Each structure stands twice: as structure tokens, then as C-alpha cells.
Length: 113
Length: 116
Image 1 (cartoon, rainbow over the protein chains, first blue to last red):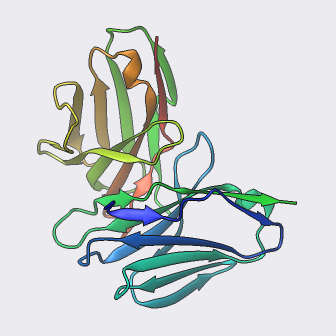
Image 2 (cartoon, each protein chain N blue to C red):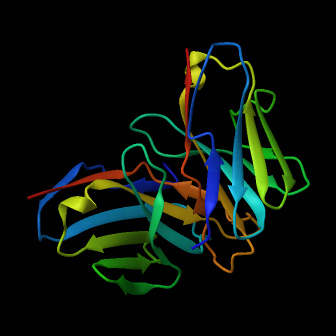
């Protein structure tokens, strides 16, 4: 079983729709969860971080965390063509791991006009 | 957010040569730096973790004698790909974690290495 697994995609949504990206993780001791966006040929950029169960909203983005189910998701409302990218879920291990992140395989999102 | 730079952004070299990639934290002290490699259409794979002043910790399957990492100061880490071969061609990305006041890692812009 992969440590961090994302819904396989690719995901295609029309402009203005809600895009839903999902991620599960295997380490119950994980404490910090991140969503990164990566455009082709570029390095990842942080979209959202979440540490507590529940929802966290930032503009059009909402991250949801359920530690009991070991599940984290990202919702993108009013999707725009500029949101088309690969979205990476990353999980930071607990303990003295110096911030080491484990990434999921990524989900390619395409928002079509 | 904090800024991390990488140099060079792109390098093309002949097989058998060594290539050095620099990663700098510009406005904070990076107590820990991470080096990732990303092949086309794949996710980031952590290669090694380096803490300032100590030896790097390499992930399983990464050859420490081939990928030399030096983290000599709180703002600079270097990755040297020794005797590079075409299969080492990849996108190398560093990230830094430290005294920025944030819990997140800050990523550099990446270095595209092509070995002919």
C-alpha cells in the first residue's frame, strides 16, 4: 500500500464547476497535510496546509481533513482554466522527522472553458 | 513566504561529467534542506535530507557516492551529480525548512538536468 495515495485522475471539469481532489495516507501519526499545485516544468507551490480535523477555507480553495479516516481532500470552487495543473498531496510525518514530506502521485486537473 | 533559489535552472552536460546544483535560502536560515528528483509524469521522490553541519541522510535506493550533498551553511546546500549518465537526466528540486516561522517547506524553482 502506498503511503500517500491520490485519486488517479486525470480529472476534467468545466469552467465554473467544483473540482474535488482526494488523498488518503497510511501513517496515523501524521500531523501536517499540504496541497501543492505544480504547473508543467515548474516546482510545486503551496496551496493549502491543514493540521486539524475539519475544513479550512482560503478563497476558492477548501481543504478538509479527517484523521480518523486518514483522509484529506481539496475542493476548488468556481474552477478556472488557470487552475489546470497537477495537484500534489503531501503528508508530514510525526515525530522527529525534520519536516520530511511524503508526496502522493499527483492528480492532473484540466479545467475546460 | 520565504524564498529559495536554485542555480543553474537548466544544465546540459556530457555523460561522465559532474554537475553541481546550488540551493540557497535567501531570507531565512535553512536548518534542513531536502533534495527531490522528479521524472516526467511522476511525483517528487525524496533523495536525501541534509541538516546544516552534518552528513546527509539518503533515502533507500539513492547512491550516496553518486549524489554528493553538502550543507555547509544555514543558507546553502549543494547537490553534486558525479559521473552523470543519461539516466540521471531529471528535474531536481530542493526545498528548505528552518527559521522562517512557518511549518512549511519552501521549494526552489528546480534544475533541469539533461545528460547527453
